[in-house]
Length: 323
Ligand code: NCD
Image (cartoon, rainbow, N blue to C red):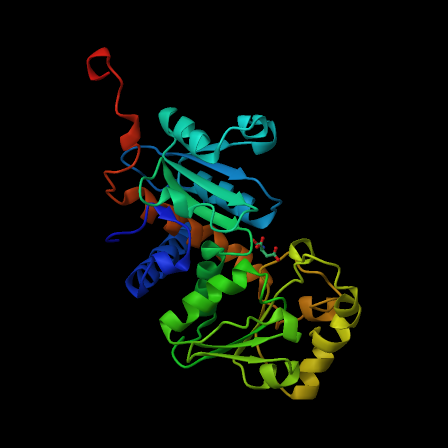
């Protein structure tokens, strides 16, 4: 894949050709895995890949770890809590240290939005964003796209309703950048203050009418309320949310719409999604989890195989003569 970024921070870092390349590579990995379950994909050099999650994660961290094992790479679980980051070391110094130890790629999740941008011009190591604050979660959006493709749905002209806390969701932000790239339209839905005020894209419309959003969509994507990212308590919205914006089988039946429902997890059952909907054939959340393995393998392969000569340039060996 030509010119795949070494610091993959945002969907904005890649183009439609990369997206098609990743989808096809991920499908290949999925097919191989069905035939020869557990067979490592041979690399010329066995890469060392570290994950560093500075924020909670169940799905993303473990899906990367499993993808790394399936690729036959060496996995380092870099525990930020017990690392020198806790002693005040900067992220850059940490990346430099990992590079000097021979780590090829680091998957990082941080609570700070846009924290990885600073590393793009002079990357201390190859980096994949596993979610940064409210900004981006590009690997999640790409695995969602793979899930849509694996359902057998064409992208062009299809509409996704993204219902929930659109302002604070990094998953939502990555989907907004990705879906129009493959010709899809988006209806953002939620309470008014959970809808972005600055979106100007011909493929994106906004509404607070959830029934209307579902009725006009081919696929529904539910987002969790990101309470931990709200500056102040929003209890009034939390209390009325299940009634006003929660999706259950009853609502789908009333609208008369049979649509696949996606959720990146973790789901708050009884808030944005009902227990009966999760157990129903409409729910594709487990397919997303399955596909996450193959899309993340594809993304790691694309990052590892680019021929970026800038990586670690700053670490040219010191000699007495060069002082
Ligand atoms: C999301 C995340 O952490 O951004 N989950 C995930 O990665 N699968 C969504 C969320 O926290 O709501």
